[in-house]
Image (cartoon, rainbow over the protein chains, first blue to last red):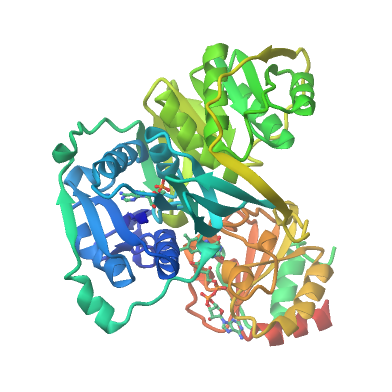
Length: 251
Length: 306
Ligand SMILES: Cc1cc2nc3c(=O)[nH]c(=O)nc-3n(C[C@H](O)[C@H](O)[C@H](O)COP(=O)(O)OP(=O)(O)OC[C@H]3O[C@@H](n4cnc5c(N)ncnc54)[C@H](O)[C@@H]3O)c2cc1C
Ligand SMILES: Nc1ncnc2c1ncn2[C@@H]1O[C@H](COP(=O)(O)O)[C@@H](O)[C@H]1O
């Protein structure tokens, strides 16, 4: 069984500061998307139950080679990276073309392709669906549980108002929600071993791919303006007084 | 804008999309419905030109089938632009539909308008730290709009027409549908929110939080870990990126640190009160009133005084 987990390199969101409403990326470490880590954990959990090989697939700039170690330490067996500066902040449709081309190229045909429900920075939730469409594979989104059987998987999909349990034939694309599991923290020895795990690195050219133009354009990306009073009150009494004078309580 | 096609699996959201399409100046608002006679009626009554698909092969759990159906409807309707709802089903559909239509796609769109001849969409980026204004540069467009961004449409003069679609064999079988544990609270509609975070010591303290919410005439909400990790409250009550987007008159935030994934869901509140033991908690930078105190003590005090 071959499981591929698509993981995106993102800046550590907790460390992004805002200056003049602009996000500042200087000195912000790179990591992998938080929900992508749930997808990896789901793959590793399956591997612990049956014989499976877990491959991390990522498209991005050269830094991915280092960032992906996190995933190799956390239980992936190997990685397949498509690296090019143009892929760093590629638009979802472009990323999907690249990932789909890579998946087609893989020697061990993937049976299960896992995605996060959304990437940490863009959170568009498009890439998994687009890849499934390109490869003409069935897809199940928002998985909160995955059980793999012979040639098929039973997936519980968590929607706003209900849960659907569906059976899907493999190969298939499944996107997971953060609540599916708690990603493990790798041990020191796992971290040390991560650097020695197999890496396949290709450029878009090698996938016989002409990168398409982005289909969307970002006109601006600013932190919202916040105009808050920021009045420090010293006691509950003072707070009640303030809220009462604003007619927010005691009506 | 000539014609726009809308689709949502939920009636109320579909009606909101009719309003969205009209706001973009669509000459004709077309709507596709799938195995849902009732929704077809509702949309026609609101003035939409409904394309009805009646085909057992289009199972709602099979996104591939739904995408194929909607793409064919768009073709038949002669529309380049499709509006969907950015709920989970809608988001999942958006990418697949966009790919088969050859369309650019934006999801989680919280505001959409025509400006300089372009459709400008606003959506959160960087986990909510920023708000991006984006456009789709291809002729074909798929836009998934957040629920409740528009009012439900009313109107008249709609129509209905049955259409045929070809759907490939199903690769997904629906085995079971389980209802979610029945918390039907709607925190997005609440005028007052009392939200608790991980500063709350234990679930045993919840009754006093509920009491405060009641005294203020509001609902209890929470940060994500309180629902997903601790399971003290239902996921229906989560505020933020993966939860609800609330715009109450008053939000009282108790023991919440203010990570951006949380604050995106509350930053449109009119007045924000933060109670936190840490005077440097980042939530305080976006609060109107800041009380540096133990929340348990403060809530007990407020309950006593209100
Ligand atoms: C992709 C993604 C999506 C996410 N979506 C969401 C989302 O939708 N909603 C969400 O909430 N989170 C979301 N998160 C999680 C988010 O990043 C934070 O982890 C979370 O909001 C923190 O919750 P908290 O403020 O309750 O807890 P903490 O960050 O642990 O903060 C607890 C606060 O309580 C204060 N405190 C402690 N004791 C007391 C006391 N006795 N009295 C008063 N104050 C006290 C502390 O000073 C601290 O500020 C998401 C994360 C990711 C990666
Ligand atoms: N550059 C990338 N490389 C690998 N996987 C990606 C990349 N971008 C997105 N993904 C995957 O697609 C999912 C959805 O991304 P998005 O559509 O950006 O929300 C992510 O959770 C990842 O699993």
